[in-house]
Amino acid sequence: MTSTASELLVSVVMPAYNVAWCIGRAVDSVLAQDFHQRELIVVNDGSTDGARALLETYRGAIKVIDQDNRGMSAARNAGIRSALGTYVAFLDADDWWLPQKLSRQVQLMQSRPEIGFCSTAARVEDGDGRLLNLWRCPNGSTEILATLFAQNAAIAGGCSAVIVRKELFDRVGLFDETLRGFEDPDLWMRLAAVSGYACIGASAATWTPCGSPHCGRCARTGRSCHRGCAAASGATASPASIPTMQNPRTGPAGSAWPTRTRYAPSCSPPWDVAGSASGSCGISC
Image 1: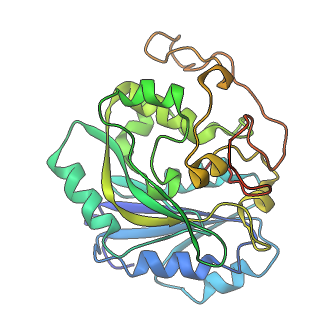
Image 2 (image 1 turned 120 degrees about the vertical axis):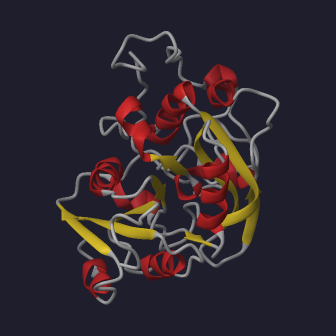
C-alpha cells in the first residue's frame, strides 16, 4: 500500500470475475493515479480463468478479497465493507482511468461538502479501443434525482467514474444484491435523495460496453444489460418505459423502492434504443 490507514482518503473497489484478459490494465490505471492517498481493493468473485494468479503479481500494492461467485453487487459490497478510506470509488475490471481522475474528484469533494457523490465524463470505447461516444455529464438545470427517473444512465461514466463519501452508505445502504440489473441507478437514486451530486466535464474514465469477444460485463454474471446501449449510442430511455418507483423522499423507512422490476437475463436493454448496435450493451454496475 502507498499510505497508512490513517492517511487513506480513497478506497477503490474493483469486482473481478473471469477478467484475466483485462484486469491488469484496470489495476495499472489505479496504481498510476497522481493521487497517492488511496488503496485498491479487488474482490475476486470466484474467478476460474487465471485472474487470481494475475492479481498475485501485484502482491503488496493491492488488497485482494476472495469469495465464492455471488455477483457484482455482492462483490462491490464486500469491498465497501473492507474500505478504510473517507471516500469509496468504483472501477470495473474492463474499464480504466486517466491519471488525474482521483485527484480531480477529491479536490472537488473536499471543496464542496454538500456533494455526496460525483462522477466524471467518460469515453465509451469498443474492445479494440475505438471511440464510440462520449458519456457526458447530465444537464445541470434539473435536479439529479428527477433526472435519474427520466434517464437511468444520467450519471456519467456509471460506476467506473463514481466516487462516494463512505459515510453515506450508513444512511442509504449498499448495492441491492437482489436486483438483476438496475442496481447502480437504484443506489444513485438513494444517494441523490440525501446528498448532492456533481460531475466533472473532462473525461477521466474509459468505459467499455459489451460488444467484443472478451466482453467481461455480460459474461460475468449473466445479468441483464440495460445502460450500455444508451450510453454508447447517446440515446435515452422513453420515460413511459422506465419502471415506476416510489420517491425515496416519501418512501417508508428502510425501503426506498417498495417494488422493483427484475429484468430477465439477456444482452439487450429493457427498452428500445434507437440506433443501438445489435449485441452492444453493458451491465449496470
